[in-house]
Image 1 (tube, helix red, strand yellow):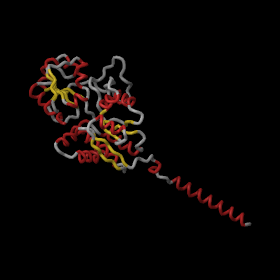
Image 2 (spheres, rainbow, N blue to C red; image 1 turned 45 degrees about the vertical axis):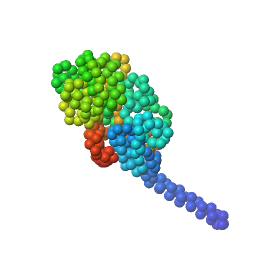
Image 3 (cartoon, rainbow, N blue to C red; image 1 turned 60 degrees about the vertical axis):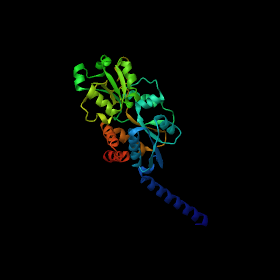
Length: 311
C-alpha cells in the first residue's frame, strides 16, 4: 500500500469512529439539554398592596425553583408596574384578569372568566403574553348579614337590585377598582348612600348597621365572617363556547390571578412553574395568605411556605 493509500485508510477509520461516537452521544442526549433554556435571571414586579407583594413573591419563588435567579421589585401602582414591564425593567408582573383587561381595553364588556381571559389575550401588546389563570380570584362580591338577607328575602344579586334604595353600600377600594360600583349601577342598584371604607369597616357596617357590604372575594376580612354572599351568575366551565345571545353573564367581572410577562423570555421549565400556581392556587389560599401578611408576617416567607406545599 502506498503512503497516500495508508493516509486515506487512516482518515476513513477516523471518520467512522467519529460517526460512531456521535451516534452514541445522540442516543444518550439528555432531554434537559434539549429543553428551551430559560433566562439566567428575571425581575418580578410587585404591585401596590399586600396582595401585589405576595403574588410577586409567589411567582418569583416558583421561577427560582427552576434554577434561575428571580428578584422582586416593588412598584408604586398598576400603571407604573405595567410601564416597567413595557420598558423591560421587569420581566413579569402578577395581576388579575379583569383589572388587566380594563387597563388595556377600558370599554371591554366581558365578565365571564373565560371570556375575560380570551379578551385579555387579544388586547395585549404583541411583546406581552399570559399563561393559564388560577381559580384564585379577587372578584367583587356583595354581602349581607343573615338577618338582613332573611328580612329582604334575597340571596342573589338580582334580588337585591330592587332593594338597594333602602341600603347603604359600604364599598372597599378593591371593590371600586374592580368595577363593582359601575356593575351595580348597570343592574339598577342605586343605594341610599355609598361609603368608601376599608375591608374591616365594611364587615362591621354589615353586621352592626345592616349595610350592604361591597368587598372582594380574597379579602381576609371575609374569612370566618358570618355573612351571606349574594350569588352571582356562575362562570362557564373552561372549554365551553363563549357566552352569546341572551345567555346570562356574571354581573361582576372575573378577576383571576394571572402572570403577565414579556414574550419569548421563559423556557418550558419556567412556564411549567407558572402553571403550578395556576393549577393549585385557590381563592381561600389567597385570602388566608393575605391575612397572614396583614398580621405582620413576611410575604416572602408566606409565599415560600405555600410553594413548599404545592410546587
